[in-house]
Length: 77
Image (cartoon, rainbow, N blue to C red; front, side):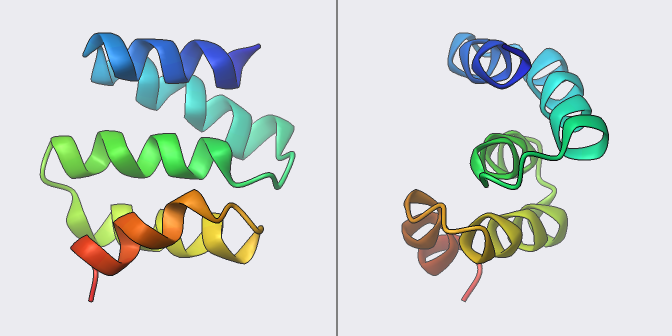
């Protein structure tokens, strides 16, 4: 539920809540699906945190979250 809420907050433009909720999933629940890393990366890109975003996108890719590859290729190469 945290992951879906983080996604909704990101889409609504509340980057702070998107970051905090996706951080909970990454750091405490750790499902290794890549979705929370992707959401967190998108929020970091929106606030100028490119190095952290690229690190998170790479983690998402490593977990098999294929959607992250396009963003990684566009913003991190």
